[in-house]
Length: 434
Image (cartoon, rainbow, N blue to C red; front, side, top):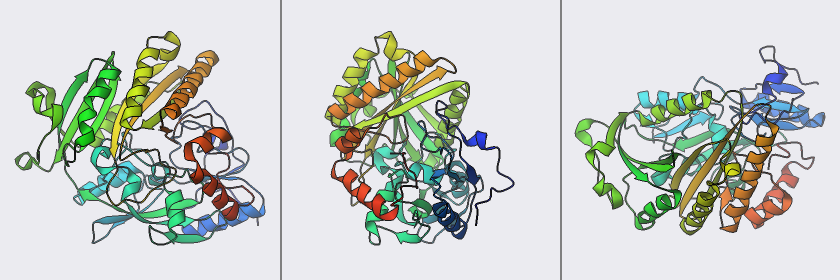
């Protein structure tokens, strides 16, 4: 039985590029299967035909992670939220669901996703496959920390229920594992009470090294507020934004504000409605200005000591024209590891409090030399990140090699290879993505 393309699927060429736009891989077939039995059947048929298989959510990868050359491409993205809110406050949701739509629907029910990325038009499965970090990671960690259980469709088509207590090894490698052990079809994850208002504090750092020093107080901080944090590099300065979510003007839950926030003048504070959607809107508008650009993006995560060294190195490089050419943004988050959490071997975090920074190059189309230069800069950033004990984020651009994978993940990489050999001996599922 041959795989058939569905009539409503667009031209194959429309799925030959991802968000990065500098790679082109055209699949032989594109399938949008919405049910577990459909997905399983397609996987079995692809195996019978020896077709490679890749999974594409919103296609927001930066280095071809959601592309496939000459094989089967699964579309796993929908703008119709498919979920069920459970009595215990958890949500059961299909991974094809868009985070933006899920959050809007949950808000109407008085609930909210614990961690949301800055840009929200992404699939649930897509961000869970790399970790999922954002402004609430300061307190809530990653999206993966809030998954209670998941439904995993193995490369052979068999579906399993996985949790920290059942098929735990697959659970650990499926989340933040770049789809290496199977396709996450559904998850049950925690939600939080919806706080529509956020009180924001803005701090300015005159340099990257000054910014790194301004975060030192977080090393001894154990509070639950502030519960939002991000920072962006703008006109030679780093602007840090801390926030506290609350439900109404009469119910500000500021708790005990610590560190430099006690000295922030009132003119550097602001209350905003639905902060996550506001961030998304700003990010969406900004990216839209670079439609005809290659997007060479990459993020790096380190412990505090390594983070300071890393930013010190970057500060020196920023003065050089080749490093800054096409570099349109630098963005930073901080992630605290929740207590009693499961360890995910392939996640980006390296310590209980991990500091992340991303470098986003935008290169006009048809300019090959600046594109090569941007890739070289990320190669250098990866080298320095590893030198200082850090890890890269699997979403972005990285020129992976076997030796680098072994250096970054050690025994976890060996265990992953054994799992893949057992689950997918032909190497057809998500091959070459990691």
